[in-house]
Image (spheres, rainbow, N blue to C red):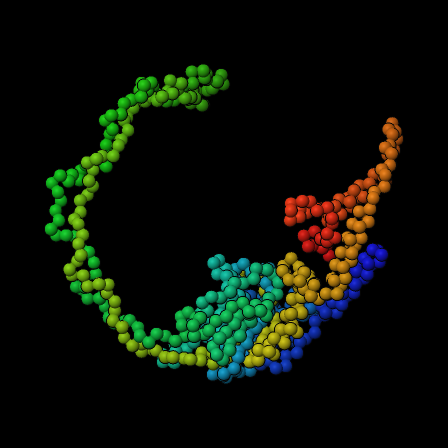
Length: 520
């Protein structure tokens, strides 16, 4: 019976494993309903233009992943370390002032992990600029994505906002950005901005941080109504010292500033046994010049020194200890009194902010029509994939289900140590086989323990000495197995103290697995 149950469990697990075989083959996902998407299929480098600026010494290329999850899938690879990369792609224009959600998401895999470098992207209006002129000076609207180096470890969200009065563009940084994952797996970075000014930063399709454009950015979107007058300055006669020396205070006649802080203790006496005529270290009287010592070559020979045995109490000149001087006063200073001329802490006068404005809808973004990667990194092997610009949150989620979600499950099985959800995914993907396996383990344990609880047979007679004859090891091995089996069952049947403190000798019949873990 037990053998049949085990065979059933193994067969069921085999079927579950076979079910995932076809899921590893890449199939280009549908992009219906998305404003723009790029999965890097086909001639992607005709759509993504490498910057011609000299500073970009890294050359992006299309490549498979080192360890493929979806077989045949290509992404945009930044292959070399210690390089700067600049590349961008255009998409159909999103007009300024649109009152609808905005979704930006992309996958990035740091195949060498990310220790020092960026993985963020920029969304911008290309305007009249040629694609080959894209660089770090190109004005952007949004910068979003991972960045780690030194003390920096965050998923950036920076919005550039224009002051309608001054015309100046100012960076607005999210105050509490989340940190970047520390592994070499694929991650999905997502930003959702809603018409009510709320926004959400997503990691792997799940919310990682939330905020509001009007309250969560630094500096704030809207400037203060009043500011310090930049032309105001502190008057020359302004007194900002709250205290002053009392002009009527004088140093007392008995105040002696020359008295030292410490003086010799007149009551101190040289300890008995102190030898002022002796040195603490003396030449070793038992030491002799080596026979092979040559004064001309080796110099004058000197005996090594040792501690003087006569200096148990002390040797050399004795000096008395010092004590605090009761007459010490220190430098005299006049007492402090309130300053009658004190006017308080000076502050510039407050004036109305000439650049003040109140934008209630910063979520209505400026015109955008391009996305670019402008990064420097000390780690190569950064691979981007599946860029999305969308105004439909549900459509973006569906695209994620058909791309990243599939890849994440496969990578979790390929490298479960790097994915905390590896075992959980197995349980979710194969609930029936896992349940059958668990049932077999439980029933098998009960069967063995019940069988092992029967009256044991009488022990065999002791073997007589054989004077070097071959020992029967089969019987010994079987005895050890039976003992191990009985010990395992005894652990399950150990008595517990009842409410009266007495030992309950009845087995409860419960069966436990080691710490709830299974070798499967």
